[in-house]
Length: 477
Image (tube, rainbow, N blue to C red):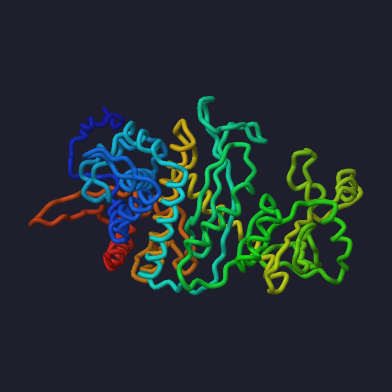
C-alpha cells in the first residue's frame, strides 16, 4: 500500500510575535527625517503661515505629514492603511513618528491645512533636500533643469469638492508638479479642479520652485510640454534669466514654418531611431524680444501601422495631405512632426534631446502614483491638498534614499545576475520599497540597545546597512 503523500500535517498560524515588523526599512526613512529635523521644519513652515491648531497630546502638522509619508512609503494609499502602522508595535521604535494617528484623526487634521500652508510645507521639504545635498557632497553650482507637468487623478463619488469630469469623461483632480530633474525631487506642487487649465498656475509654480533652489545654484532651464506654451510663462522666464524649451501645439503657423526647412537641413536625432532634427526661427505673436529658435523633429512612420481612429495621437503629428495619402495606401511611409520653441544656445540635436528628456518628470508622476497619488481619498480640496503634500514628502524621501544608495553603491553587495555597472542612476519608489522599505525583521532589545535582525541570506542586507551607516553621518543642527 502506497503512502499517501498528498496530505500534509496542519500548520498552526499565530499572529502574536510583538518583535516582528514588516517595515524594517522605515528605520532608514526615520533616520533621514531625524537627521534633517524634518518634522520641526514642517511645523515651523506651516505655523509661519497660520498656527496649526493642536490639542494637548495631539499631532502637529509635521507629525501628521511624516506619519502619512511613512504609511505611503510602505505602500499604503488610503487613510485606513494607517492602521498598518498602528498595529506594528515593533516598528514603532524605528519610525520617525512612533505614535501614528488613527485614520479619523488624520482626516480631521488634514482638513485644517490651508493652501498656503501646503505650499509652505512643500517649500520646507525642498529646503531640507538642499541641506541633504550639501551633507552628501552634491555640488550646488551645477546646471538646474526644472520639469513642469500635470497629471489627472481619477476619483469616485459625486461629493468630492473640486472633482470634475475632464476631457476623457473621468471625474478627477488635476495635480501639477515642478521637479528638479538632476535631484529627482519635487520643488513645487499644486492641486487644481478637474477641468482647470494647467497654465493657470504655471508661473506661480515656477516662481516657488526658483525660490527654494540652493544659494549658488547653476544656470536654470525649464522644459515643458505644449500645455505650457503661453507668453506669460515665456516672459517670466526671460525676466528671471531662466532658459526654456517648450513644445508648441501643431498649428497652421508651425506647418508654415516647416515649409522653410530645406531637405539638407535635417540631421539625425540623438538617441532616437528614424528621427531627424532641423531648425528655423519663430517669433510668437506678442513676444517682445529677439526671435526664438524653433526646433522641428520628424520621425518616419510606417503607413501600415497608422491607426484609422480619429482619436489617435500619432495621427495629429502628420500633415493632413500626407495622412490622407498614407491611409489610402498611396504612401508606404510618412513623417510625424513635433515642434519645440527654445532660447537655449546649444546645437539643435543636443537641445532637442534635452527637451525630450523632460519625460524624466514622468518618473516623478509614476512615483507619486505609487506613493499614494493613485487617488485622493478625502472629500474636500483642502484635505486632498494635504494628502498631496504627504505624497510629495514620501516621494522626496525616496529620492534622497535613492541618492544615498548611489553614494554607498561600491560597498553594496548585489545578486550575481545584477549588472552593477548598468544600474540606473535613479531607482523608482517601487524598487526601493521592494529592496529596502517593506522588509521583515525582528526588533530585539539587549543590554539597553536596540538590534534589528534582518533575514539571513537577504541580498540587500549590505546595501541596507551601508545606507543606514551613511545616513548616521548626516549632522543634526
